[in-house]
Length: 489
Ligand SMILES: [Zn+2]
Image: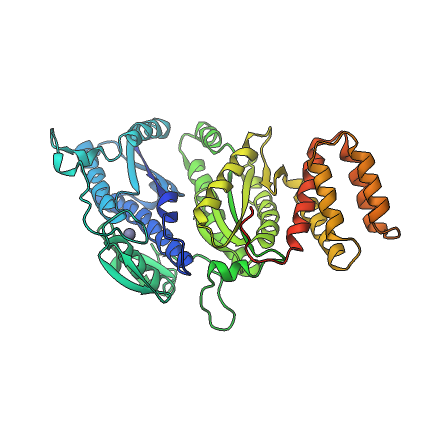
């Protein structure tokens, strides 16, 4: 193996940047879209700058997507040049993202050592701004706070008021730029560096009609109105949910990614396998899943997709069904190719009026919870978490119970009482369950009685099944609640 330098890059602050937008009004989805697109352009622009500057072949880009990259560069590369590229990119990114997104670059003679340098570098992001050569640059230590802040991000001084969905909103320079991009985004499908359709980090991008060499797809799947082709707002998406008009935010990623990468690197020091692994995952999350959304899940909105993770929003019941399908596609795709490989997800439900970032935070916490369980490979939502092989049974029971309520087989109040029993701390739980079923349940409905008996068998000794039962009951109650976006999450 020829010796080389490995250059690792990583963007931080991505999620905060994408989600830090004003949520009031109907423009939330539009603003999120613009920011997530801009972020993608930052990634492409940084990679393009490095590749052009150092004359790197595509083959030497070993990892890309998901806010990071790893590039193999010639051993004789001048490290002063690397320092210059780094500070140039960092300065531009600081300007264009209002200091919210940072790029760290680290390099060393192996990928893992480069990763370690990157982590050290990450702890001092922003340092380039405070230093001016060898002396401290005092001018940059405080941000001037002049006038009213931008009403979209509240991070920078406002510059111009523009009409957004019938309301006047004060924008800062960067939010104006994101807005312009967002408008173009609905028209562009493919782009490639070299041109002047849009600019990011000093790199111009050109709109192209087809997948030509070097082009990348900018389109993320966006739910649209059937008749007018207009993108749906979060409210309109929530209104398509069954029962309660709630959105669900799904956050999913690969389990033990760091360990898997280290294993792959150990197995093959030419790093071809690492490249296949990283491209395979990026292809799955960034493209294959996008195609599935377009074909089968048109109501789901992509906040972020790429690398080894996924952040989506949609009607709560649709997202729960999609999660099961995602797990199956993952099992048949990347997990089969790079076994052993598993995936976990956290799904948080939210009324559409609340800023989506709060639900994203909860989805992240749920994902963490799923990953704390032995073996991971789980979904956490509706107050419980379960292995993927149980997913269909939990949601399927929820749907069946909801159907029983809707067709008058059982009352909603009985199921509510059963849920309280399951969740409560009752020593006579089984006895009370039987009493409720006998007294208030239908006497001659085989399906219901089978379900109720099955549940009874698990009531005393199987904690896991009990929490799944509570989730199914919760599902049914939500699916049959006909009130709009109530704040009682
Ligand atoms: Zn702003």
